[in-house]
Length: 75
Image (cartoon, rainbow, N blue to C red; front, side, top):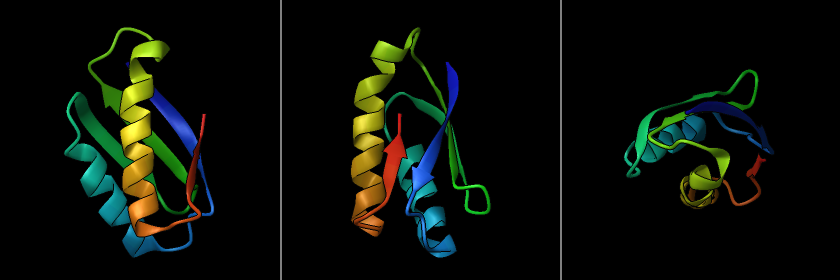
């Protein structure tokens, strides 16, 4: 499943790059990309539906807040 999400309070291009790298290391993630210019996160994951994506998004949120405490993935 491939889905995109808005990122709120993304303030740093370098942090976005580090977040992308960390999310790509999460189990079940095939590819993740973050566009700093549009504040969007695109995730391609090995899941069949949105319910199965929730744990991956929870882990991705932890990665994001480890670099920028106020950054939130809008679901």
